[in-house]
Image 1 (cartoon, rainbow, N blue to C red):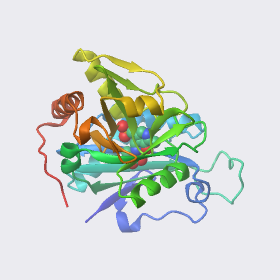
Image 2 (cartoon, helix red, strand yellow):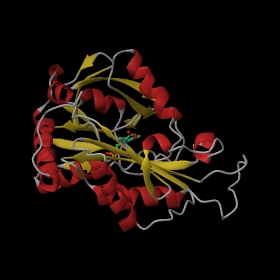
Image 3 (tube, rainbow, N blue to C red):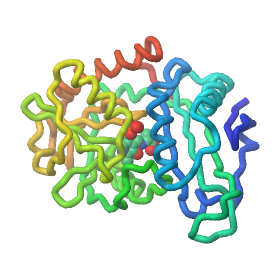
Image 4 (cartoon, rainbow, N blue to C red):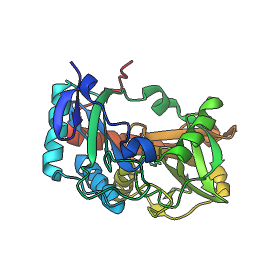
Length: 290
Ligand code: PDD
């Protein structure tokens, strides 16, 4: 049996239905999180929960559960679904109410839902690296909020997908922001550089882990804006996300990065990242679940 969370209860997933006038469905009026599960344990759970509450607060949604209660529910869901390696997807919307752009009355309860899914580690891509394209960042100016509104991101990813690429690297004019569902890093002369966590990008949890790992291990790192030229001139390029971990980029718009193979700093960070996972969740393997 497969279970989901809906409005504070764990129920059969097939029973988890939302109203046709749910504001997430109609307006994308809500926020979400994706949390990685390794060995049946949430990785960086606190950081994800903190961001979830922060995202909700920034659009005026009050989550009607404490973080402790919600964390407990998520752990219970993972256990009930017997999930070893995968993800939790969780979202909260402003609830169901007759369609009107302005917020509904205070008594409309936000709708929280969550489910789990088996997702393997992308072992082959982690080993060989991935190909990417560049695309203008057409999204709104609050990309720091993990909003359900993902049209800009979806259109960017689709462009990449249509040409057999893993990710679309977005840029505002000359400045590189982030991937459609990932943060982007370059390494130049031994220095790792990534966009500062401002309103133009999502403050990735994986990005934060990588910044900490750099600092703890004597790898020079800078959060500053970099350009498309910097991207092409970089010794190494990689991206990060909850599901993609530390993913080497070996091609941008058909041009090879680091002669088309993952570079040494990227590989070092991959090793350190696995150590960080194992510290929290126990030993992991390279295996993928099909
Ligand atoms: N995406 N930037 C964007 C636009 C993202 O959507 C994501 C994650 C990230 C990386 O954040 P994190 O390291 O916290 O996963 C950066 C998730 C995985 C998704 O939408 O599926």
